[in-house]
Image (cartoon, rainbow, N blue to C red; front, top):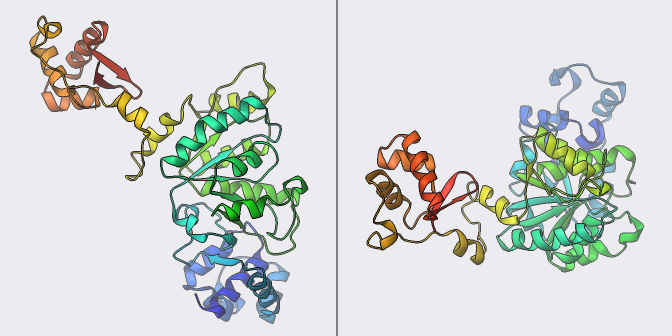
Length: 372
């Protein structure tokens, strides 16, 4: 992107403000931020506009965007605009995507498979254990973990998981939270990335957390809630993810642990309960071809080949033998067995029930079967 287009895009974020959908809509309508900048109010035909917006279009002053660009260059930051190829594709899909992302670190992380994990600031040992059990497996499957840089669980994620993407509710040069001083540098040293839509010196005002949370929700196909107290930022992020059509996963916890109160409420509202990272990866294997399932999971769920000459198969009827042959060496859904064999779904389910009782097949999540 040329500097003129970059400056005009930054200018638009200052004219309409953070979280406004108008900047992205105008860029799409007129083809570029520069074309929007060149137009007058009359040409925009974009509904009612405030006096401050009218004044900005009348003055067309790029002094402040030039100042921001100079600061970014000085601090070795990169700017990714919504028109850029490196802009995250999933983030473009939300109703009010940021038109500018300020980045520091390895910008290629934005083009990778991303998975968001969020948790409470009041994380306990159980929360850390969930992080240790889930996130390394998801990372090793090929994902880059996205989190929110807050105290507690998210701080632990960025410190322990390796390369991550941290999403901030303030300018990159602002030290917040103060307890995480130096963490941005650690993330960058681990080949990760720190991003925000806020320019230099912007403090973490209350409304900024909602704006940050929509990015956490929008960057990936799904989000794992590790622990959440009631009415927390974690809950807001999960709600936004659901609104965007993303899948929300939650770890069921004790009714008597207040750190799972929000998680239990999310489950009641439709989040998927998970007790292993492999359950999440199984879902995502249908979205991404490059997922590397853990070897232990592959071995456990590969399914054996049925040797029909063995004694244990001699009393099976014709339908059961056809079902066994269909499953042999595979992991097959009950409906797929029916489609492959031409046997009715009702007969297939009846045969599967008998075979499961006999210990010849194993039913897995999602009504899929393998040979035992």
